[in-house]
Image (cartoon, rainbow, N blue to C red; front, top):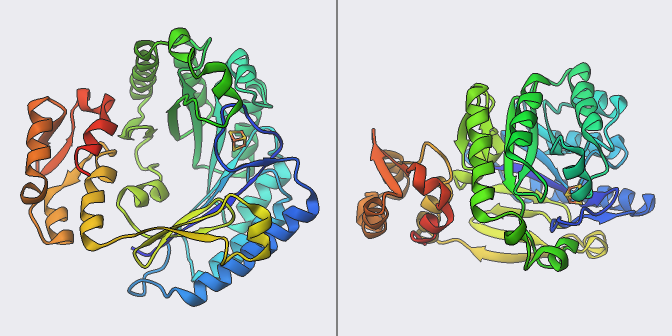
Length: 376
Ligand code: SF4
């Protein structure tokens, strides 16, 4: 398995009040052009500097953000072509995140012609009141129109994001959203709980009050209802936040949970190359000036670090940790390294083992972060 490619587009039409991603609203066309020109240079630099791992080429490309469907589509399609040519990428999963408010038929057709074969749509909800509260620029009609555009353009692999735990959201409403999305042809659904992050507009409004408005129990009930409804619709949960129809798992996300390396391109992007985890500063001007100087080292991963990180990542998946794979990858039995953590979590009914896999129990799935941290 080769390295993967992630591109961070830091532009959006406006800033959603809950968002803590690096995304800038209302940026001038000149700056957007300069940013994508720099991405082209960074791509060529990375391809010349980092040779393919064991002659194995990247097998997923992901354009996230921000809103990649906001800039002119020519920037996106040109960059995808440069990535494909520079890294020698063939047929593989190529995803673009799109927003209902900026997607047009022309853009969808261009993306498909350029080689994207998977679209991930920031739907978040199909309840207009919830969408208004989240500061989204689309309504439910716009969200369904975006799905229709993608299908008519020819996309067959479409994912949608949903947010649970939003004030005013109801369990019945979430069930209806899931049913409508499945009927609209969505094959993959990512479900996130609303997080109140420092630095966002929501932080000053909800930091002390969200739990009074939506209690943790209510939030969990919404999450469980989403999972149960998706299961009724034939979706299989394969990771804590991700469910899909059989065969539509995100290969890109799966590569993160496997601890594979990836190229991170663009201001705000993170990458992992030659055992070094790195980030790009959240500063587009700095990136345009000098993309190499814009990079900072997050962590140099030793073999020990990689082994310790593996359960942390892998326990997010419903399959869990393959004991045999762990042994062949790290040269040790997982019980010799993490025996205490495994046994302690099993005693508390948070972990279980069957068929050579160690995985979270139903109870453990709700406390996944806690369990994962006990391995670090
Ligand atoms: S569209 Fe997405 S990336 Fe942009 S501000 Fe809203 S949540 Fe953040």
